Length: 357
Image (cartoon, rainbow, N blue to C red; front, side):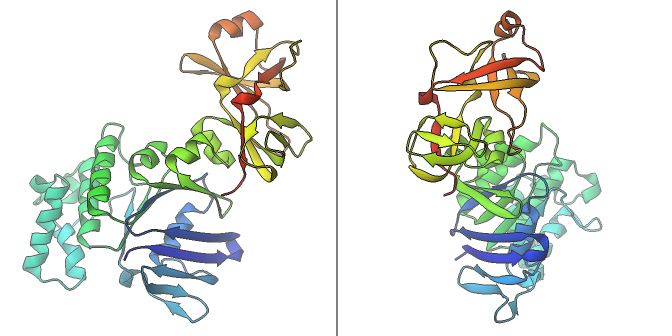
């Protein structure tokens, strides 16, 4: 079994994680810079010891601060793939890949056979006799993938694996990883800033903010009904946090009521709605829809075929509400930063959900 069951606390870093990954599951870890994503990988890999906690890989305890168990990184059966391929410059491609089984005690001849098998799997057989200095970035990353998998890891950790690749090469490596992870049923945790990585590779998305896992769900769930401000930003939707006051309303910490439809009657909640659902008026509409929000425009950016308007940050520091309007509407309303307007949203366009899951 290659599951992960992790509870780890590092109070000095203000980090506290609880994470379970099923055997064969691929989890994408998203979050802003400095949130603790790489710390999470380091805990799994054995590169970082928690101040308190317990980590299991399958049925094996690899970290347990209560009993003093700490299996070193090289003995955990975990392989890490970074944004830099980190190939040994003095070895050929084949020797780089063969190094992984050799490190497990496999004989020289069998290790070469394993290396050729994995080079073929990643479409790099013709590179076998080259040195790393003779490889392009995409070729080197393919070889790094082959080396990681040749180690037969129980868990594969990927830390921004596509970030160092050029725009043309990243899709090819992403397709390769998708094929390998799906066909081999590999347990993997992927730290990424790229939403495409999560969409293409992951079964599950975890969002990390301020050293905590604040959201977990399928990619579809997280993007269609985000519970965190970071997930809302990458999904391109508006999110207002507050307290549910019945299944059809939420009250923000600064006292504004938002009306919608939802699945939570009380407790912490979020209101989620698309910028495309926001109408912009210069005066409060006489029909008085249920959600009329006074806004001072701070940003105006071209966003595809529309113009995205955004108001000042909310009083709790989260991003201001955004609205997508046509260029014709911008001209007709004579919109510009600093102008007072009213954002209007119909209640049926707003989903109200529990703030945590």
